[in-house]
Image 1 (cartoon, rainbow, N blue to C red):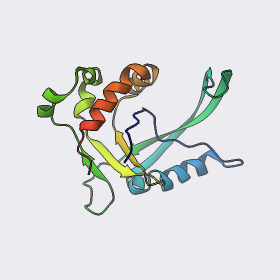
Image 2 (image 1 turned 90 degrees about the vertical axis):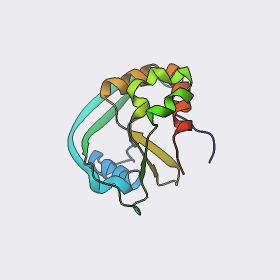
Image 3 (image 1 turned 180 degrees about the horizontal axis):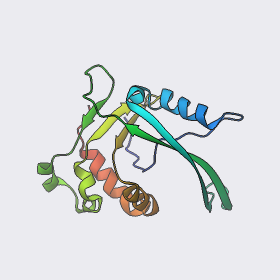
Length: 156
């Protein structure tokens, strides 16, 4: 593979022209999360509005999002399912750069590794909404820590 590009985001997709939100969610689950689809139980949907400066155009932009809640059902992974789980052991922490300390307990979380519909490796882990928001708001401070952590995970 190529270089690791760490970033924090929830699985998501843009709606296609004329596509209903429910169909976009179904497409996301069937394509990007296909190997996990039977473990995902969809919950409620909420509308979210975000105002930010567009990275492409440099002007104030309003993004309207439909946020789908879901529950992930934990079950043992079958050997042939295309997904595997990995984690960094606490004994590995002596070899970790100091920058990873800002990740806290996340460093020792389980990580699900699978391929998306473009055949790229995608890694998922669990965190609270507060942890996700903190990382997203301070992305520049967390990028080097995430990269160092991801590079030390054992991914075949």
